[in-house]
Amino acid sequence: MEVNAGIFKAYDIRGIYPEQLNEDVGYALGRAFASFLKVDTVVVGRDMRLSGPKMFDAITNGLMDQGADVINVGMVSTDQYYYACAILGHAGIMVTASHNPPQYSGMKMVKKMPQLLSGSAGIQDLRRIVENDAFDTPTRKGTMKEVDLSEEFIEKVLSLVDVENLAKLKVIADTGNGMVGPIMKRVYDRLPSIELEPMYFEPDGSLPNHGLDPLQEENRAELQARVSAEGADVGFAFDGDGDRFFTIDDRGEFVAGDFMTALMGEYLLQKYPNSKVLYDVRASWSVPDLVTAAGGTPLIERVGHAFIKTRMDKENAIFAGEVSGHYYFKDFYFADSGIVPSLVILEMLSKRKVKLSQLLGELEKKYFISGEINNRIDGEPKDKMDELAEMFKDGKVEWLDGVSVTYDDWHFNVRASNTEPLLRLNLEAKSKALMEEKRDQILGVIRG
Image (cartoon, rainbow, N blue to C red; front, top):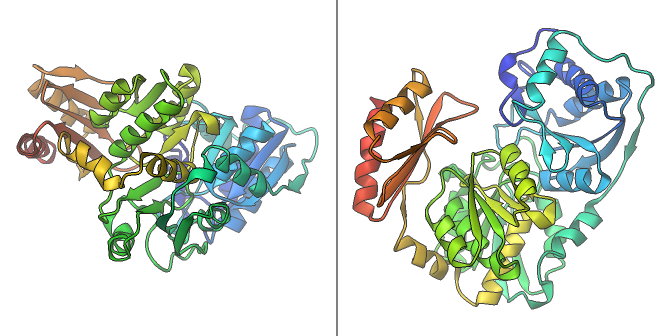
């Protein structure tokens, strides 16, 4: 069948419903998934999107018609879905478009935890099978059964922290009418010392309050205002399907993902000395510096959960963090979760008996980061990156993911978006003035 090639992304399948991704395409993708992986059982969950029930039915009908049995784990957060794939030992499909606007649908696909299908490892194969009607001939009709693993998930995430010794802390959490609210309430009901103030905990695919991506300032502005106005110790924000997580400190300030990676990595190395911690190419020097000082081994990796999970598994790393708010834990099957880092941060603040702003203050005096700056471009991303590599060839130039250039007192990474016609800049320097000067210089090249 004819299918929009643009829906096949680097890490998942995503497109506008029903123009790009609809029931017919979903059905074919279900059949293709079972054909390609030759699996007899598939775990399937979905998020709260209005198109979710129809897409879920289409995909699962495709799987069953292709001979695969479906384990329906219901409407869940992505970390609940990863948990189900891990403990049941099966491949999986999560029907979700993550933080995209409400008109999108999509699929996140697990081969076998922690291995995911990605653009170069499976997703383009699904496209070819669908386009060529190259499905295997099924020998049976699959069945569906419903399984609720929420109680087991709650026990698992609570086992990762010292619940008994959490301090009395006030948390305001905004789940943005996405998938985290219901499970977060049940987890936090087991934390007697934590005062939880919920914001928009009811899943609602019409998104009546704000968008699903907390990296966009307008989607976290209300949470930031409330944290400082109500004297909360910390604010937590989650994206739509709950695999990305963001922190607001006690000042009401947004915490950069690399600073959070540095602090959590340093803290977890006290529990697991001499371990490895992964971080992505965009990150601040604070990550390798704090990890090294804590006796750990920092390892750099390209951006994207498919790459991070595979490398973590290979290296047996205890923790990984991405600037974009993905945090991965060896003790959680090398998967990313929103709930787990929220608990780790509460434990860290309880054990260290400090405000989060104090920990961040030490980093802010030393590391001056630009944050990720997205730039729409007309031409080829590679041409701009080549131009930057030539311009700064007296620095250390690397091409692990986009172009990275390092000097003694500043460094940057520029990489193309996997989903949009954007170049993304992340830059850091050892002084604010130098950071701003170099940031503006590079933006001039990108936008010129």
